[in-house]
Amino acid sequence: MTEKELTPKVKAEAPAKGERVRPGRVFLPAVDIYETPEALILMADMPGVSGDRVTLDLKDSLLIIQGETAPPLGPGETMVSQEYYTGDYYREFQLGELIDKNRIEATMHDGVLTLVLPKAERARPRKIEVKAG
Amino acid sequence: MPLFWEPEWDPFREFEQLRRRIDRIFQEELGLRPWWTGVYPPVNISEDDEHVYVRAELPGVKPEDLEIHLQDRSLILRGERKAPSAEKGVNYHRRERESGFFRRVVTLPRPVDPDKVEARCQDGILTITLAKPEEVKPRKIAVKSA
Image 1 (cartoon, rainbow over the protein chains, first blue to last red):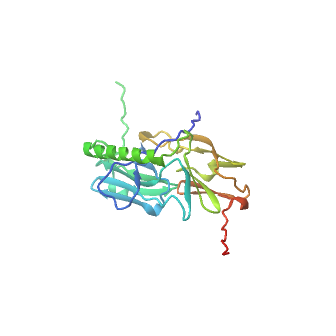
Image 2 (cartoon, one colour; image 1 turned 60 degrees about the vertical axis):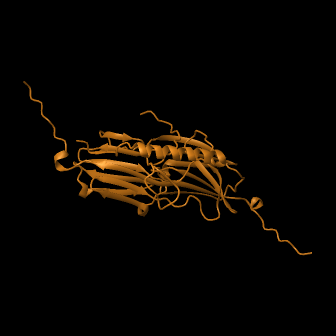
Image 3 (cartoon, rainbow over the protein chains, first blue to last red; image 1 turned 135 degrees about the vertical axis):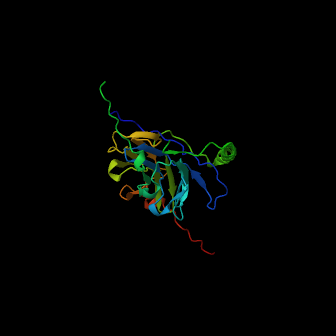
């Protein structure tokens, strides 16, 4: 595998949704979503968000991911040069009927949220045998 | 039937976003705009009386995949952001998180004490704390009455 050099990206801001209680910017976390035979796995980059500051909301089939960050500077600190902005995170997804909504699992590690969304039994792939004619 | 999808495009929301973006451009032109080096990772540098702090957002990067060197006033950050390697043979719906390696030099705004450097990774944020040497720390000057 060839090694790829990372390039910086400006974090995308989340679309405004009503009035927010907390001041500051809100970003859309970058996500990877991949599918295994048993589940859909969602990984979201939310640097600065600790496990106890993540909120997952599931209303009907709307899944809302939210993460709050602590202030970027410690007490008595002043910014000398700023290349990135900090703020909270927000993103929403509609889950299809084929996701088993009662068995969703979430973990937060090193600023990355991992969600395991198991597929309902009937959504698991079946191998189709091809018969020789 | 899809397993998931993102909510539909909303033109009003799009408008609101555009308005906020324009506001932001004005704000940023007034001196708040970050300078852009084009090198990963972006860093924020701050200071207080005793220390200089260099911070970078590196979600998912393990401390063992990071290498930090200090040469005079140059701080060198090298490392790798790994893709979840165990997951071979899976199919992707979205792939926005990037992986790869990085090597960056950050020039510190002040001289620092090379023996007093501390690096810490927490919740995907790397914080490097560098102590200012005695001679550059601000001193309080008492004003004597005549």
